[in-house]
Length: 148
Image (cartoon, rainbow, N blue to C red; front, side, top):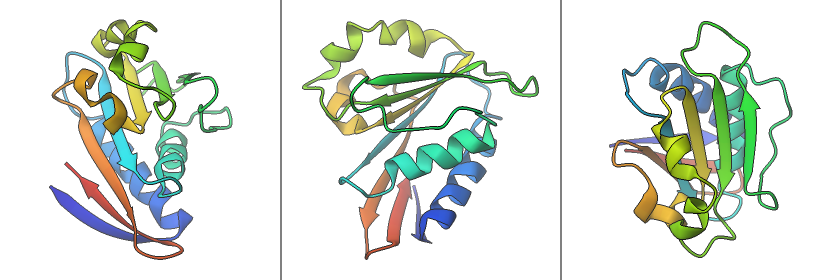
């Protein structure tokens, strides 16, 4: 477990970019899953934007609260991954809601990266090898980011 303090959007995005580069080098046989948790406004979407930018996602990254899943095709051939899925589980009651959207198929594909905001709401279906990142408010712009 690692704990980091970020001060502002820029630092949170920088941390996300560093983690994206590190995590995408891991040898895995299924999707790379990053489970994000924390209060409303604690930095989950900001982190996702920084992570996505490091993967050179061209589309604007928005919170998918109303559509649940955004799919971003990765254009850069130096990554072994082809698709980034950005999921927002805020409105879900349980992981069963995601199962209806073929999430297991997405989790099983080693060419996918899956970032899940509000992952604690669907904890039971998150793969055991997922990287969990929790965000705590420490002030207006200050965040404690716990990575496990």
